[in-house]
Amino acid sequence: MPRKRPVPDETGSEALKHLKIDDTSSDSDPSDTEPTEHITNAFLDTICRNSLDFDFEEQCSVSLSITNIYACLVCGKYFQGRGQQTHAYFHSINDEHHVFINLKTLHVYVLPDNYEVMDKSLNDIKDIIQPTYSTHDVMRIDDVIGRGHDLMGHPYTVGCVGLNRVKHTSYINVIIQTLAHIRPIRNFLLTLSNLDKRPPLVRKLSMVVRRMWHARRFKAHISPHECVQEIVVLSKGRFGLDEEADPFELLVWMLNTLHGMVRKKKTSVVYETVRGKMQVAMRKVQDVSQDDMVEDVEATISTMPFLALSLELPPTPLFTHPSTDDEDERANIPQVALGTLLQRYDGTTTVETNGLVWQYTVTNLPTYIVCHVKRFTKHNMLEKNPTVVNFPVCNVPFGELLHVHGSTSVTYDLVVNVCHVGHQGKSAVDGAVLTEFEESPFFAYVRQGENLWFRVHDLQVEPVMPQMLFLSDSYIQVWQRN
Image 1 (cartoon, one colour):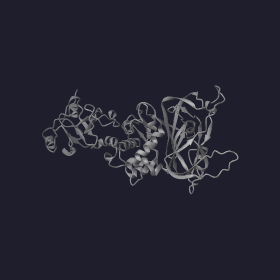
Image 2 (cartoon, one colour):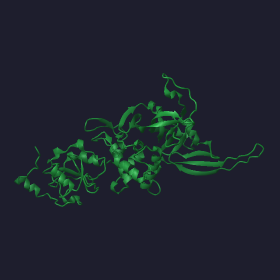
Image 3 (cartoon, one colour):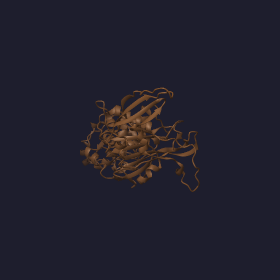
């Protein structure tokens, strides 16, 4: 039987005298109605939290307008306005859904009577729409491994929340996971004030990160749809939805773009966290005969910043022993230690390319080091070097390995390991493997607490042992200074 709106009696009419009813088609001034506590329970029992999803763009489901949007707390649909002749007003009459919330002001109204209600039972909904964190909250967020439960009782780990994949965007999901686990950047996004005045990318990324670290979510997953769309638009299609792109290129683009949007006095929390410095020496290779006298060629030395250390893998052998059914297929894949790859930046190793000899010396280590394992060669990431990179997950002496003056005792722990997965096809001429892409080829290992690891592959989140990390094809690593 349809539910009827409550008709106030003579006593209740006294309470309604204090309500200001809005009969206009617009509500640009949300303070035009006074909240009441006399009718706080009216229709609140019709709210269906299982139908609510605030991860998507604030857009009217009828007019597609993006201004003055209200969400129906019964069915979850978005409508424009709340006055007469508005889509929300007609929805309240036609569908008898009466409770609406303004997605900007978080004021709750009952339509079509158009009065505001205030009730503490609505606070959880408001907190889902706009999660807020104090400095004290952020300081304690890493002290314990937070466990939350959605409305269905399904447990999830706070901070390790699955992200819904929008078409071919696993490469975007892993970068969002990466940024959400670099503490200074994460803390900045959690406590950022005046979000409405921030650039769209900063605002939308901040909302995704805030919802990832929320302990009282209605659902155990998040849709980063708005953030993904903003990346596509802002990059002018460089990073799209129709095919997987290079997550490392996206990470560098995101770091530089965020720096430009939030910097103050030529610096920002982004560069202060991940940017280091190195000295680059370059000299030409002399082509001389055996009898000629060779004079030392003076090197050109320059200092330059870096956001990541690119690690060159050794070439894949052209011929390998064929594996049998009883052998592990990975037994034939070459292996290399992380320390060996880092020798490129120790100040003594030289690299020769195109008639030039390069020598790299790291002079300043950042708080977080990003390492990029160069697996892909050409043909749009179809040729991949499958070499296994061996590494410990904690106390890696980057200062000693790189011979950084004054920082030889500095160690780092791994916090994020982005990996690539793909079926191995036939070998290319140079020994690289032609990779057959899977539908979602990128996933991330992320660390929570001291040594608890999770494998996050789009919506799938599962705990793993630290010993399992190096078994996958590492592509991007983020190391945190101890």
